[in-house]
Image 1 (tube, rainbow, N blue to C red):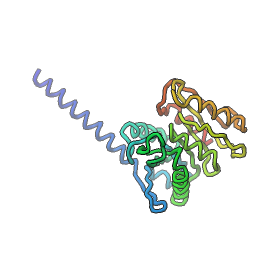
Image 2 (image 1 turned 45 degrees about the vertical axis):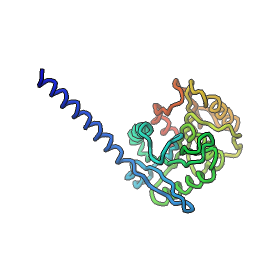
Image 3 (image 1 turned 135 degrees about the vertical axis):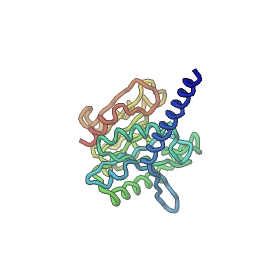
Image 4 (image 1 turned 120 degrees about the horizontal axis):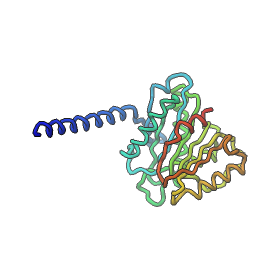
Length: 245
């Protein structure tokens, strides 16, 4: 019995070290980089960096919702790690930019993408896009966003969407009027049926897009999924293939 308990303890410790090593190894695939804009440092993480140097790589710039500090939180990282694994199927490079303080009026200390400080965030994304295109071989630039990040992504879509070839917005759609003269880039909208904050705004965004020329199941996919307000990547492969087709 004594040796059995010792064996079980050893196996538990070995398992803990295995999991820690696996997570640590995965984090090495996310490299933190910096851009200086008007003397102000902005940060982003890039995954699968070697792939972007190959011919005709595709890039997804993904804006998360609200964060507490200028690094990826544990829960967010776990989702990004799963997203990264799926991205390997489509030779997709993932970019995870970090928001700034002062952008979310309800809590100025959170790192966010809006609705305030829009000009600073738009300048950051435009410079980031230029840097990616200049430094690497990029075939298509896609935009993705969750919650507060999806609201900001809608602003990018609504201002000048010719820079980006497609949009994946989840649980966050702006109520602002959609411009009628936009290029009809492919768009994926997803929201939880139990989302207490964003279900109505996402339905409104779908309605506006259709009124302005988007066609459901042709250049627009809309899904209401059985969850509340959380980032879900169940349809990640399908979404990326649709946007890149």
